[in-house]
Length: 54
Image (cartoon, rainbow, N blue to C red; front, side, top):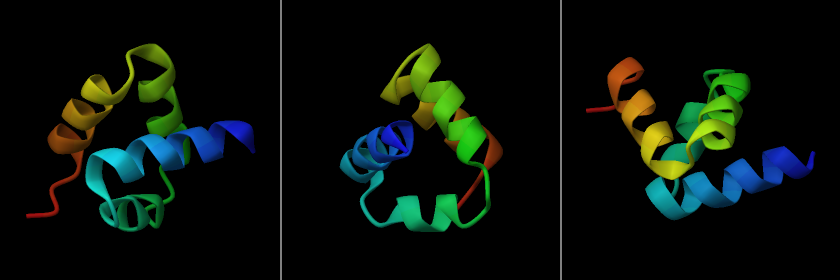
């Protein structure tokens, strides 16, 4: 639960409400792994590469 709160805070800071759309895909483990490995920048790159919202 703590990790979920952490990733929520980081992604909210980075993307705002976009986090809700991303989380709804059910990819929590992907988000968590990216944040644990490198932090926001890698997470943003991975999200951009694999999930396009535009």
